[in-house]
Length: 362
Image (cartoon, rainbow, N blue to C red; front, side, top):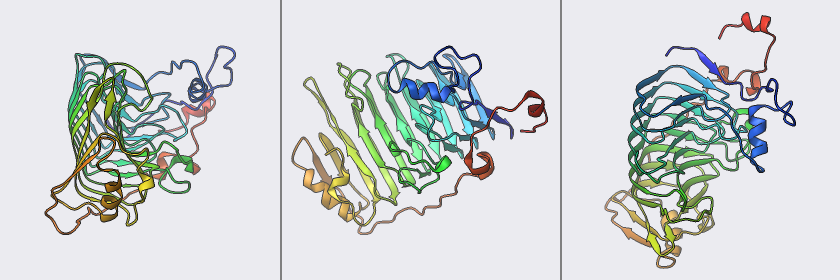
């Protein structure tokens, strides 16, 4: 706790790197691994199986070589309150907070800008589900949004994303990106999995939140890496309530169809506002096996009209339970990340001589 800053120096040149990787940083190794090979970058703050009753308060965590805060097994009783995670969007796999196989987690009033998921709830294996997790009143910037997955085999349930302001950098020059670099994977809300790691994801609520400047505003993808296997994801009882999408971005509504198993994506949209024009081309890829329900609040008319072109084919259904005559979108107030956290022009920290470092105050 406190106002200190922990810097993982993921962008600094590694000392005594093994050939042929001399001159590389952790992030450089990550980029190389993206084209083939494995990365063994360390996580920054890691909670192992059996950890419990952990609080992070006020601190700043930045420039992690890999995930900033994560779990590696069954962990319970965690609170992150008013913490800041600040890392360039160009740094691969630098998730903000990843509650994996976690229960009774709260992430609130915090600020996260990174190079991958802002928050990613997951549940690998078969014995330790993820459940009872609240992500509320946060500010998210560059990154891949409010995520669940991709490991969901142990089951994910009772997840609340509420009162969050999410301003991405999916449009060049827009949003609040570190170093102003647009991210082609920028996303707002996302549930992802695979046929080799899927399971039940249920009782998920996205509510009272605003989104802008993401390339993909909505992603429900049961097999986002085109894997094969028999662990079929099942996304159901997902509520999108009192949401505003201020800018156009793609929306993916995909259910599961795998080796004869069909699990329709089940989403209810209640008082959800989109930009005035929402062309059918923004539904990308085209919806399949998606069961959408509208109401009792309104959903933007152009979204409803254009999505209707997909209903009745490819396993898609639409049910309207709308009883309210007018949209009441939540008010959006985006407060951008403090510039003093990122240094002049958002430049990453450089490694200084030891004598100089001792004179600095963090």
